[in-house]
Length: 131
Figure 1 (tube, rainbow, N blue to C red):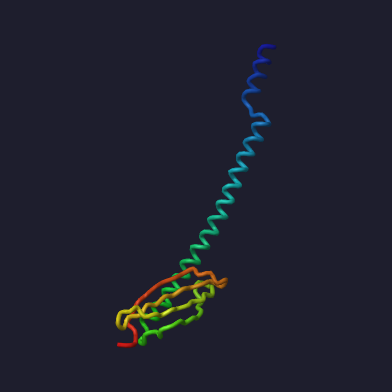
Figure 2 (figure 1 turned 135 degrees about the vertical axis):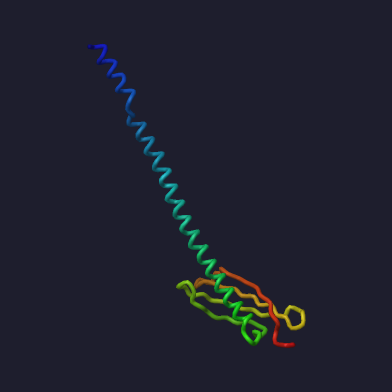
């Protein structure tokens, strides 16, 4: 009976985890969980940046298309304005410059967010008014 009890006690010690092993496992798990939380935060910030950049580019394209499709060519020089798109206010600046080719102008559009950071740009060319 004593032999069985000592063998049973030896198997019991080998079949479970010690407190130190459990603490180490919890520490490793918590480090992994913290890394995942940080990664999720970075992913959310990245998605917001991509969304803002894409919306700013859409606004820039819209301003350029308006200049391209207007019956009158835009005047040489700088124009500025603002538009609401995607629930946000965007400030745009349009620079029209001659290209050197007769009757062709270059239209540069830059779009900035409310902090003034330029997030979208586009360039277009069209016939100017002097033909």
